[in-house]
Image (tube, rainbow, N blue to C red; front, side):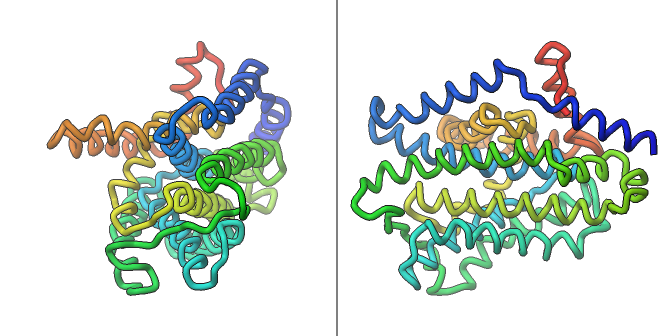
Length: 329
């Protein structure tokens, strides 16, 4: 019981975000908002995709932070959100404005559907189980037949707001959604539900004394994480204007994990952008490295899996050490 009280006190009193970090986030938002006015079409497109990938990094980071687990299968939820938006447009003529909330709700349901039968797994066993999702994604898409567009995929061309530049919409929608997701996660961290998940992660017996089981916390963390990943997939479909099976392979899942390590598991804007930039730009840089690419990402994947039973704490400790001893909750 004293452990739970300590966690409650720390969560209530130690969650204030330092002013320099908040200022840096606002400056980053202003800079991102100005990019289309000063940069060319290539950079506008690339940064738009980067921000969509940043939301995907947040989904994996959330599971690390609140569930204390590693997932190698989030490319499944990413693909689900992307194809959900693309199919709604192709079959029903609905824009991404409908695709986003539908993807979020359906993604949360899928997250629970996966987490429930695997609730007894943890650590590397859960990571391997989620990897099966990533391996199955391309085949599942192809089995959907003409509905999913086969190897060629589907195009997403309907604007969110008719009459406005579709190129600018492909950029600013990921920016707005990224800002909202970061804000909601910050509020969640200070909420009673966030406290429950952190308590169940760190002190399961104390949480059970208050009536909250670790199993409930795992289901909730996976549901929220899957919903955010599906939103990221919907944004990717809109910002990239196309979806195909080749966009959601095991490599995609590995990129997400490595991007999360690059962001140090942060749920803030700057960390998410760093992870998103890594996913978006580094593959282009490493394209000339040939056979070294699988080795680099394989080593990164092993690093993530071997961080220990509590990867979230390891990343937080490393981030605190680099920041000069300050450690976030």
